Length: 261
Image (cartoon, rainbow, N blue to C red):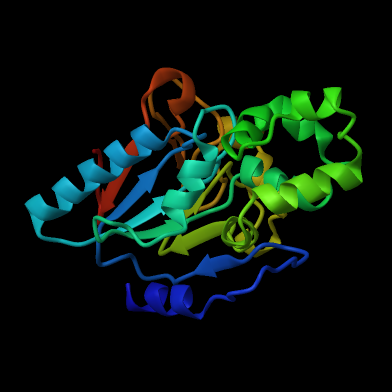
C-alpha cells in the first residue's frame, strides 16, 4: 500500500497529453491488503455511492483497510456524469482510498473537450447525456447555429471545470499488483503487459473474452456488460450495466479469497 500511496502523491498535477497513458506496476508480490474493484459507473452517482458504502461497511466489519480500484467509464449514458467526476476527483468522505483507471468513454470525452470536430462520434456513445449533466444541450446549440468546432470548444471550456479536465487527463490505464491486472477492457492474449497498446487496454473484446490473457495473470476488467459477473479463464468481468440494471458490481480480492460485496 505504501508504494501505491507514494505513486498517487507523486503523480503530475497539471494536465498532460502523453502518447500513452500511465501504467502502474507495483511489483510481483501480492497485495497484503484487500482490493475492491468497482465496475463501469456510466454516470450513476447513486449506485456508486451505495457501492462505496458497502465497501466502507465491509472494511469496518473486518478492521482491514483496503484499496478501491475503479475500472473506468465514469461518464456517458447515465444521468450524472458531472456529479460522478466531481465525486471521484475529491477525497472520499468515507475515508476510502481510491484509484480510478481510464475507460474508453473517459478517454474520448477527454479528447472531445479539446477537439470536438475529431470526436463527434462520441455523442452517439452516450456523450449527449454527459454534456447535459454539464449544462450543455448540444441540440439547442445546433438550432442556434453554435455547433461549429470553435463555438463548441468555447462552450466546453466554460462548462467543464479545469479540475475535471485534469482528472480525466491523468487517469492511469492499468494497475498490476502481483499477478493481478486491473484494466478497463482487457489484454491482447499472449502479449506482454508493457507491449499492450492503450487502444487494446480500453477497447478490446475479442479475442480476449474467449481466450483470456493467455499468460499467468488474472485480469479484472469491465467494458463488456453482462447480467452477472463474468468469471472465465484468467479473467473476471464486472461490468453489470449499472446505467440500465441499477447493479454496480464490487469484487473483493483478499489474498486468494474472492467475493462480491
